[in-house]
Length: 191
Image (cartoon, rainbow, N blue to C red; front, side):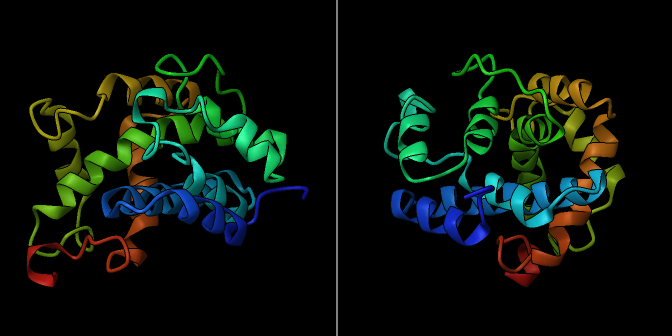
């Protein structure tokens, strides 16, 4: 396998991940990564596949996240570069693999960012469908809102990408909007 396909990523992830909130998170990251691939002119499906698989071992090993990823995924035929990208999203937290490619930097940044986007969209009558960047940034700056999402990590990821938070958020929000129903972000009136 030259690169991970979306079909294979779904087979692998779905064999390990059963909790609904983790599946939703995988989808949020997947669509944000697709948007980032478009932004950088890269292979959309490939980036989505890596995004979908990024938390492969989290449900079974939440306290040992990413320690049960490398050997298992390599044994399943996932290319080394894709495994490295997955490991890099935990850089400085539970991994010492530094993000160096645009894919790795994007995954590092959007993992936490999608959590804030999701929280913001869930509160709105029409969810992410009409979420404007200005509204999102107001919530982003309020550190009490979605407090478990590490804003400093997002800012660090943006620094790696050479992007402002607003620019990254704009790409991800627009990339996630077409999938609002699938990712549970139709809002309080659309649910």
